[in-house]
Image (tube, rainbow, N blue to C red):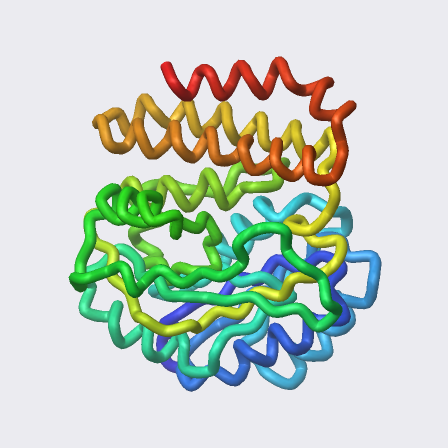
Length: 299
């Protein structure tokens, strides 16, 4: 195979019913000079067997496997460290991408002008499950020029309530990530919140393609649909504190405003979810810690 243009990194944990459809959507990309790095996160279903069988049908699929569950952040970091592509795409093992996504995006990015590229997405459910959050990712209609500074673009998207922290909505230049020495924060959920905002606030040049390339599956027992738990809140508190720590690295007025907004948003959505589901006891237990971090975001 000629040089690898894009590395697609897929963490996998117990997604056997959806895994083949997700991986085949990458196999079917019209851009052929790609590698797919699937990192099995100690799955207890037959996900690993499926991956191994799929790798027999397409040598571009490389499988890395952990015996025990280490979390999505370590899986993504492991995949990134093994990647050889000029560009990186982080993909989830239950979602789907359009067949021309990587080719069109690569053609736009290959000039070397941009740090990363964004595009639109939507969501679907084959089981009638509702997300409980805005699962439509249409935002490129807001973009009126080809090249945006990252902080400027985040502010535009937040002002229009269209910012998404999903890393699956970005194709990123590998050298840009390397220059930042950026890795996903281990041991938490909502790792995208920390990772993606650092990409945006560090970027000098972001472009876009006004196409819906990404389709997120809304399903039971996923991170986005599971009921709030104490561990879930602890993860958010960790991410919120880490967001506030970023203020020493991004200390211009607009970046500080954005980081504080993201911190508050993380907990406002949480509070609304808990009130809607009647989890008043859990909310009361964590109310002091949640309130303290929200107050810090205003200081």
